[in-house]
Image (tube, helix red, strand yellow):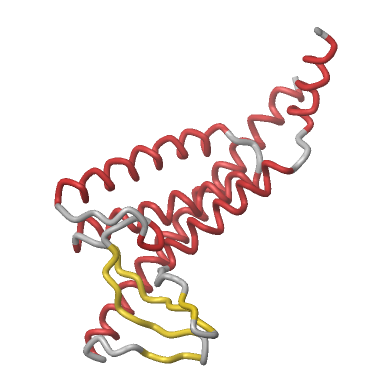
Length: 179
């Protein structure tokens, strides 16, 4: 009886962790965008040098993370919105089913970031990007908190794929026993 309750409790804890991280990532993304849009309007769009390798800029991104797959028309924008929402829904199902805290936290980051960028597309027709990292003549594409959350979340999922999971190991041993 104890064994069946433990996975359900783990799943519940992981789900709540992922949900809280999703909310935090989304809230941080929205707050920074509202503040930086106001600040950039006050500065009339002029770049703001923070360090020799980090600036705040105003870039409207009509593509996905880091400017990939630029959407030129409203139809393409709505396709990006639909794809983002469909992927987020699928990841939400994964989040509801996982027992692993790293996976839940990573999924929360990805979903929160994706939803933050979807809100931008609905509200402004493009995603507001502000952070510009550069050095030695090289520039990384401008990004925002949502993009950072998505990237960190994906890194967490990749790291998880390299971990040894008891259930995966058990399945592999059972498969070999049946050969």
